[in-house]
Image (spheres, rainbow, N blue to C red):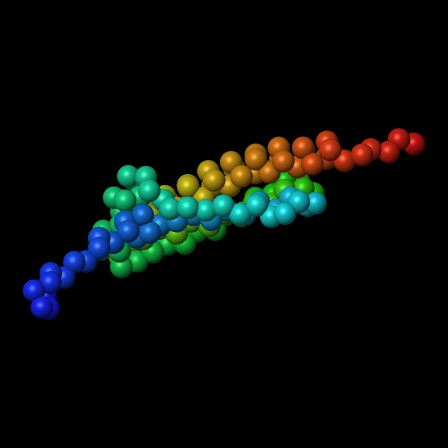
Length: 123
């Protein structure tokens, strides 16, 4: 405190402290679609603890012949004990896998739209 003014500290952004996700959908003939955001579900907030450790999981999938490729990265902050790190790893993998499957479905639909809009040639 200086000159009679109280020192005020902002509360940390718990959503940033918990974790985040990033998704990239690569569809040939189209721009790469990028999305991401915080992980704000209660189940993730429960493992933050002291926040001295974090896990990063990356999952990738593709449709045959490379028509659609999806990559998802998930980062979770957690306690530094082995049990919590194992739990956070499993939670991050499960979330990344779910996001990847959703992204693959979306990418396949977008690829089908793109192919449906192309002119066809008949011989």
